[in-house]
Amino acid sequence: MKESPRTRSILLYLSFVGISAIFWSFLTFNSDVQLDVEVPVEMNLPENVHLLAKMPDSLTVTVKDRGYRFLSYMFNKTPKLTLRFNDYSDGNSLIKIDQSHLKKALARVLNKNATIVSVLPESINIKYTDLPGKKVPIKTDIIAEPREGYTLYGALILSQDSVFVFSDAKTLSEVNEVYTHHIEVDDLTDTLRRKVHFQAITGAIIEPGGIDIMVPIEKLQSQSRDVKIVVRNAPAGIKMLLFPSDVEVSYRAPISRIKDDPGITVVVDYNEVDNSTPGNKVKVMIGEMPASYQDVKLSRDSVEYIIEKH
Image 1 (cartoon, rainbow, N blue to C red):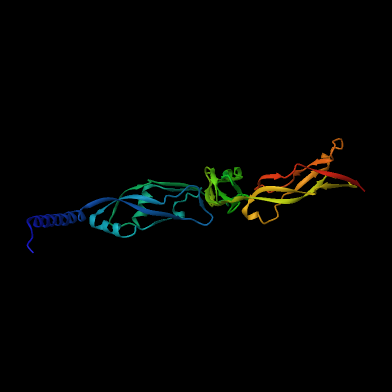
Image 2 (tube, rainbow, N blue to C red):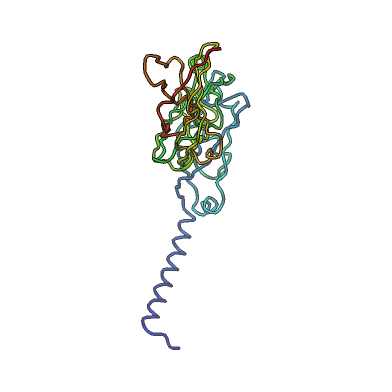
Protein backbone atom coordinates (compact mmCIF):
# COMPACT_ATOMS: atom_id res chain seq x y z
CA MET A 1 0.00 0.00 0.00
CA LYS A 2 1.34 3.38 -1.02
CA GLU A 3 2.23 5.72 1.83
CA SER A 4 0.52 9.07 1.89
CA PRO A 5 2.55 12.33 2.16
CA ARG A 6 1.18 12.81 5.67
CA THR A 7 2.35 9.38 6.78
CA ARG A 8 5.83 10.00 5.34
CA SER A 9 6.02 13.32 7.20
CA ILE A 10 5.13 11.66 10.50
CA LEU A 11 7.67 8.87 10.00
CA LEU A 12 10.35 11.40 9.07
CA TYR A 13 9.54 13.45 12.17
CA LEU A 14 9.74 10.40 14.44
CA SER A 15 13.06 9.43 12.87
CA PHE A 16 14.53 12.85 13.68
CA VAL A 17 13.17 12.59 17.24
CA GLY A 18 14.72 9.16 17.67
CA ILE A 19 18.11 10.30 16.33
CA SER A 20 18.00 13.38 18.56
CA ALA A 21 17.21 11.23 21.57
CA ILE A 22 20.15 8.96 20.81
CA PHE A 23 22.54 11.92 20.51
CA TRP A 24 21.11 13.51 23.67
CA SER A 25 21.49 10.26 25.58
CA PHE A 26 25.03 9.81 24.33
CA LEU A 27 26.02 13.33 25.34
CA THR A 28 24.19 13.12 28.67
CA PHE A 29 25.45 9.70 29.65
CA ASN A 30 29.02 10.77 28.95
CA SER A 31 28.84 14.06 30.82
CA ASP A 32 28.63 14.79 34.53
CA VAL A 33 25.11 14.83 35.94
CA GLN A 34 23.96 15.91 39.40
CA LEU A 35 21.07 14.03 41.01
CA ASP A 36 19.41 13.73 44.44
CA VAL A 37 19.29 10.18 45.79
CA GLU A 38 17.34 8.98 48.85
CA VAL A 39 19.52 6.63 50.90
CA PRO A 40 17.83 4.62 53.69
CA VAL A 41 19.75 4.86 56.98
CA GLU A 42 19.71 2.92 60.23
CA MET A 43 21.92 2.52 63.27
CA ASN A 44 22.91 -0.69 64.97
CA LEU A 45 22.24 -0.18 68.68
CA PRO A 46 23.27 -2.30 71.66
CA GLU A 47 20.29 -3.95 73.37
CA ASN A 48 20.51 -1.66 76.41
CA VAL A 49 20.65 1.59 74.40
CA HIS A 50 17.55 3.61 73.44
CA LEU A 51 17.57 6.74 71.27
CA LEU A 52 15.67 9.66 72.83
CA ALA A 53 14.72 11.15 69.44
CA LYS A 54 13.77 9.67 66.11
CA MET A 55 16.58 8.69 63.78
CA PRO A 56 16.06 9.92 60.16
CA ASP A 57 14.65 7.16 57.97
CA SER A 58 16.73 8.32 55.03
CA LEU A 59 19.32 10.84 53.87
CA THR A 60 18.89 13.04 50.79
CA VAL A 61 22.26 12.82 49.05
CA THR A 62 23.17 15.08 46.12
CA VAL A 63 25.47 12.98 43.91
CA LYS A 64 27.55 14.03 40.91
CA ASP A 65 28.51 11.30 38.47
CA ARG A 66 28.61 10.30 34.83
CA GLY A 67 25.14 10.14 33.35
CA TYR A 68 25.30 6.48 32.38
CA ARG A 69 26.19 5.48 35.94
CA PHE A 70 22.89 6.90 37.17
CA LEU A 71 21.16 4.04 35.38
CA SER A 72 22.20 1.87 38.32
CA TYR A 73 20.39 4.24 40.71
CA MET A 74 17.30 4.16 38.49
CA PHE A 75 17.06 0.40 38.06
CA ASN A 76 18.71 -0.95 41.22
CA LYS A 77 17.55 -0.60 44.81
CA THR A 78 19.43 2.15 46.65
CA PRO A 79 21.72 0.49 49.22
CA LYS A 80 20.99 1.08 52.89
CA LEU A 81 23.51 2.95 55.04
CA THR A 82 24.06 1.14 58.33
CA LEU A 83 25.85 3.17 61.01
CA ARG A 84 27.62 1.61 63.97
CA PHE A 85 26.78 3.02 67.39
CA ASN A 86 30.31 2.68 68.75
CA ASP A 87 31.71 4.76 65.89
CA TYR A 88 29.64 7.85 66.75
CA SER A 89 28.80 7.70 70.47
CA ASP A 90 30.66 10.27 72.56
CA GLY A 91 30.38 7.99 75.59
CA ASN A 92 28.26 10.62 77.35
CA SER A 93 24.73 9.95 76.05
CA LEU A 94 25.15 11.70 72.70
CA ILE A 95 25.47 10.42 69.14
CA LYS A 96 27.11 13.04 66.95
CA ILE A 97 27.69 12.64 63.21
CA ASP A 98 28.81 15.69 61.22
CA GLN A 99 28.66 16.25 57.43
CA SER A 100 32.16 14.94 56.74
CA HIS A 101 31.51 11.68 58.61
CA LEU A 102 28.18 11.22 56.82
CA LYS A 103 29.89 11.69 53.43
CA LYS A 104 32.61 9.24 54.40
CA ALA A 105 30.05 6.62 55.45
CA LEU A 106 27.97 7.18 52.29
CA ALA A 107 31.03 6.78 50.07
CA ARG A 108 31.18 3.14 51.23
CA VAL A 109 27.71 2.31 49.88
CA LEU A 110 27.40 4.54 46.79
CA ASN A 111 29.20 4.22 43.47
CA LYS A 112 32.93 4.57 44.14
CA ASN A 113 33.31 7.02 41.23
CA ALA A 114 30.50 9.31 42.45
CA THR A 115 31.16 12.66 44.07
CA ILE A 116 28.95 13.42 47.07
CA VAL A 117 28.09 17.12 46.83
CA SER A 118 25.87 17.47 49.91
CA VAL A 119 23.84 15.52 52.46
CA LEU A 120 20.57 16.44 54.17
CA PRO A 121 20.24 16.52 57.07
CA GLU A 122 23.71 18.01 57.31
CA SER A 123 24.39 16.29 60.62
CA ILE A 124 22.79 13.88 63.10
CA ASN A 125 22.81 14.68 66.81
CA ILE A 126 20.68 12.43 69.00
CA LYS A 127 20.70 11.87 72.74
CA TYR A 128 20.47 8.33 74.03
CA THR A 129 20.21 6.49 77.32
CA ASP A 130 21.49 3.17 78.57
CA LEU A 131 19.40 3.29 81.77
CA PRO A 132 16.69 0.64 82.28
CA GLY A 133 13.18 1.75 81.38
CA LYS A 134 10.71 2.79 84.06
CA LYS A 135 7.38 0.96 84.03
CA VAL A 136 4.48 3.39 84.51
CA PRO A 137 0.68 3.09 84.25
CA ILE A 138 -1.37 4.40 81.32
CA LYS A 139 -3.95 7.15 81.85
CA THR A 140 -6.55 7.48 79.10
CA ASP A 141 -8.10 10.69 77.82
CA ILE A 142 -11.02 9.22 75.90
CA ILE A 143 -14.64 10.34 75.72
CA ALA A 144 -16.98 7.92 73.94
CA GLU A 145 -20.73 8.50 73.72
CA PRO A 146 -23.22 6.00 72.23
CA ARG A 147 -26.20 6.94 70.10
CA GLU A 148 -29.63 7.00 71.74
CA GLY A 149 -30.77 3.40 72.14
CA TYR A 150 -27.23 2.11 72.67
CA THR A 151 -25.03 1.92 75.75
CA LEU A 152 -21.46 1.57 76.93
CA TYR A 153 -21.42 -2.07 78.00
CA GLY A 154 -18.48 -2.48 80.32
CA ALA A 155 -15.28 -0.62 81.01
CA LEU A 156 -12.77 0.64 78.45
CA ILE A 157 -10.46 -2.25 77.49
CA LEU A 158 -6.73 -1.61 76.92
CA SER A 159 -4.34 -4.01 75.23
CA GLN A 160 -1.99 -3.32 78.16
CA ASP A 161 -2.14 -1.19 81.29
CA SER A 162 1.45 0.04 81.47
CA VAL A 163 4.44 1.01 79.30
CA PHE A 164 8.17 1.64 79.70
CA VAL A 165 9.64 5.14 79.63
CA PHE A 166 13.31 5.61 78.72
CA SER A 167 15.22 8.77 79.56
CA ASP A 168 17.87 10.26 81.83
CA ALA A 169 17.69 9.72 85.60
CA LYS A 170 16.16 13.14 86.36
CA THR A 171 13.35 12.80 83.82
CA LEU A 172 12.56 9.25 84.91
CA SER A 173 12.21 10.37 88.52
CA GLU A 174 9.55 12.91 87.47
CA VAL A 175 7.48 10.61 85.23
CA ASN A 176 4.86 8.55 87.06
CA GLU A 177 2.32 7.92 84.28
CA VAL A 178 1.75 8.48 80.59
CA TYR A 179 -1.38 9.88 78.95
CA THR A 180 -2.99 8.98 75.67
CA HIS A 181 -3.83 11.68 73.16
CA HIS A 182 -7.32 13.09 73.60
CA ILE A 183 -10.00 11.19 71.69
CA GLU A 184 -13.64 12.21 71.55
CA VAL A 185 -16.24 10.23 69.59
CA ASP A 186 -20.02 10.16 69.74
CA ASP A 187 -23.05 8.61 68.07
CA LEU A 188 -21.51 5.14 68.43
CA THR A 189 -23.62 2.16 67.37
CA ASP A 190 -20.92 -0.51 67.49
CA THR A 191 -17.89 -1.40 69.57
CA LEU A 192 -15.07 1.07 68.93
CA ARG A 193 -11.61 -0.36 68.27
CA ARG A 194 -8.73 2.02 67.73
CA LYS A 195 -4.97 2.37 68.14
CA VAL A 196 -4.04 5.38 70.24
CA HIS A 197 -0.67 7.01 70.83
CA PHE A 198 0.72 8.78 73.86
CA GLN A 199 1.34 12.43 74.58
CA ALA A 200 5.05 13.11 74.10
CA ILE A 201 7.36 13.52 77.07
CA THR A 202 10.23 15.94 76.40
CA GLY A 203 13.57 14.16 76.44
CA ALA A 204 12.03 10.71 76.73
CA ILE A 205 10.61 7.92 74.60
CA ILE A 206 7.73 5.58 75.39
CA GLU A 207 7.71 1.92 74.40
CA PRO A 208 5.52 0.77 72.88
CA GLY A 209 4.50 4.04 71.20
CA GLY A 210 0.80 3.17 71.23
CA ILE A 211 -1.82 0.72 72.45
CA ASP A 212 -5.07 -0.74 71.19
CA ILE A 213 -8.28 0.27 72.93
CA MET A 214 -11.78 -1.15 72.79
CA VAL A 215 -14.94 0.66 73.89
CA PRO A 216 -17.73 -1.95 74.12
CA ILE A 217 -21.05 -0.71 72.72
CA GLU A 218 -24.32 -2.65 72.63
CA LYS A 219 -27.86 -1.99 71.48
CA LEU A 220 -30.45 -1.61 74.23
CA GLN A 221 -33.66 -3.62 74.35
CA SER A 222 -36.71 -3.04 76.52
CA GLN A 223 -37.44 -5.69 79.13
CA SER A 224 -39.49 -6.19 82.29
CA ARG A 225 -39.12 -8.63 85.20
CA ASP A 226 -40.75 -9.33 88.55
CA VAL A 227 -38.16 -8.76 91.27
CA LYS A 228 -38.50 -9.81 94.91
CA ILE A 229 -38.33 -6.90 97.35
CA VAL A 230 -35.57 -7.00 99.98
CA VAL A 231 -35.99 -5.46 103.45
CA ARG A 232 -32.98 -3.61 104.79
CA ASN A 233 -31.99 -2.26 108.21
CA ALA A 234 -34.66 -4.25 110.11
CA PRO A 235 -33.59 -4.59 113.79
CA ALA A 236 -33.00 -8.00 115.34
CA GLY A 237 -36.26 -9.67 116.31
CA ILE A 238 -38.25 -7.70 113.73
CA LYS A 239 -39.78 -9.28 110.63
CA MET A 240 -41.36 -7.11 107.98
CA LEU A 241 -43.96 -8.73 105.74
CA LEU A 242 -44.66 -6.96 102.42
CA PHE A 243 -47.78 -7.01 100.28
CA PRO A 244 -47.04 -7.62 97.46
CA SER A 245 -43.59 -9.10 98.09
CA ASP A 246 -42.33 -8.42 94.59
CA VAL A 247 -42.64 -5.64 92.03
CA GLU A 248 -42.37 -5.38 88.27
CA VAL A 249 -39.27 -3.60 87.04
CA SER A 250 -39.04 -2.29 83.48
CA TYR A 251 -35.71 -1.27 81.95
CA ARG A 252 -33.58 -1.12 78.84
CA ALA A 253 -30.60 -3.46 78.90
CA PRO A 254 -27.86 -4.59 76.48
CA ILE A 255 -29.14 -7.34 74.20
CA SER A 256 -26.56 -9.83 75.48
CA ARG A 257 -27.97 -9.52 79.03
CA ILE A 258 -31.65 -9.98 78.23
CA LYS A 259 -31.67 -13.69 79.12
CA ASP A 260 -29.52 -13.24 82.23
CA ASP A 261 -30.63 -12.41 85.74
CA PRO A 262 -31.26 -8.65 85.46
CA GLY A 263 -28.99 -7.91 88.40
CA ILE A 264 -31.43 -5.34 89.79
CA THR A 265 -32.37 -5.21 93.46
CA VAL A 266 -35.51 -3.57 94.82
CA VAL A 267 -35.54 -2.61 98.48
CA VAL A 268 -37.56 -1.10 101.28
CA ASP A 269 -35.73 0.52 104.16
CA TYR A 270 -37.08 -0.22 107.63
CA ASN A 271 -35.86 3.23 108.66
CA GLU A 272 -38.35 4.69 106.18
CA VAL A 273 -41.31 3.26 108.10
CA ASP A 274 -43.49 6.03 109.52
CA ASN A 275 -45.93 4.57 112.01
CA SER A 276 -47.72 7.91 112.25
CA THR A 277 -48.82 7.65 108.63
CA PRO A 278 -52.06 5.74 108.10
CA GLY A 279 -52.21 2.92 105.59
CA ASN A 280 -49.09 1.00 106.60
CA LYS A 281 -47.28 1.78 103.36
CA VAL A 282 -43.54 2.04 102.81
CA LYS A 283 -41.56 3.44 99.91
CA VAL A 284 -40.08 1.02 97.36
CA MET A 285 -36.70 1.96 95.89
CA ILE A 286 -34.21 0.63 93.37
CA GLY A 287 -31.13 -0.65 95.15
CA GLU A 288 -28.34 -1.81 92.87
CA MET A 289 -28.39 -2.15 89.09
CA PRO A 290 -25.80 -2.49 86.28
CA ALA A 291 -24.41 0.82 85.07
CA SER A 292 -25.29 -0.06 81.47
CA TYR A 293 -29.05 -0.15 82.17
CA GLN A 294 -31.25 2.79 81.28
CA ASP A 295 -34.79 3.96 82.06
CA VAL A 296 -35.18 1.64 85.06
CA LYS A 297 -38.68 2.07 86.51
CA LEU A 298 -40.84 0.36 89.12
CA SER A 299 -44.47 -0.51 88.53
CA ARG A 300 -45.36 0.89 91.99
CA ASP A 301 -43.73 3.35 94.36
CA SER A 302 -44.87 1.73 97.63
CA VAL A 303 -46.17 -1.49 99.19
CA GLU A 304 -48.15 -2.34 102.31
CA TYR A 305 -46.42 -3.99 105.23
CA ILE A 306 -46.99 -5.77 108.54
CA ILE A 307 -44.35 -5.83 111.26
CA GLU A 308 -43.94 -8.96 113.36
CA LYS A 309 -41.85 -9.09 116.54
CA HIS A 310 -40.17 -12.29 117.66
